[in-house]
Image 1 (cartoon, rainbow, N blue to C red):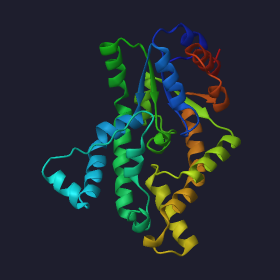
Image 2: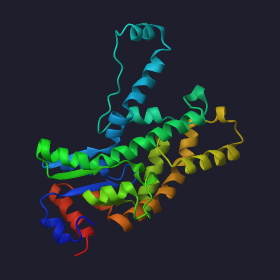
Image 3: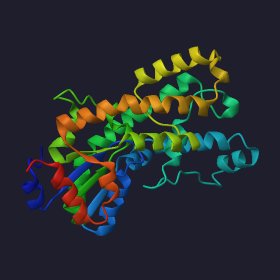
Length: 285
């Protein structure tokens, strides 16, 4: 690892970490805290995906919908209006809206093949954004003078890497430049995440094999034709299974490439010094 023990972490004047784990367990909380404390550059992988790699897809989707409205169609064709997403670190709704959900088009659903095409676009974008991390480490230092760097990864990072492959190109690149840190939740956190998702189901990226199996199982369970599936019901049904699918992949990433911290301990972090202590405790003495 980049920091083999707690002493090397504490002594280092250029600390670099990759935070990973399920969305909602504290990755962005920690990244925002470190950025606001000063001295840390915050690189959001999801923001990079939504701006650099999928921004054109997202904007074109907005325009496609606008073209269905006669007034907006005329304004677009005459270059009288400008349509663009407004993604921020804390609001990634344009990205998740573009990913969409499969099912009944009357309820906002996509054909399954169109849905899978957008999933593949996200996969390629996520890999590219993760591999951009070393560039941003150099950029943060050369342009802004930041030596400390936090990479705030998306919850789907475990879907685009093979944590048990010592030659995985994404993990080899990341671990050569940062310390991967898994924020591990408890059963209570999992239950809370499921309840939150049930209240507001949102599109997410999953491995294609997992999604095809989930879609086939859902259609068999409900006996519905594809164009009558409730998109929200499908993604709710899929989410709890996704948590179980992702947990061992996160654990393998931490076991083979980094360290583990607990979500309850992350919630107690209030300062950059608290964060230093949290990571030092996760490293060998």
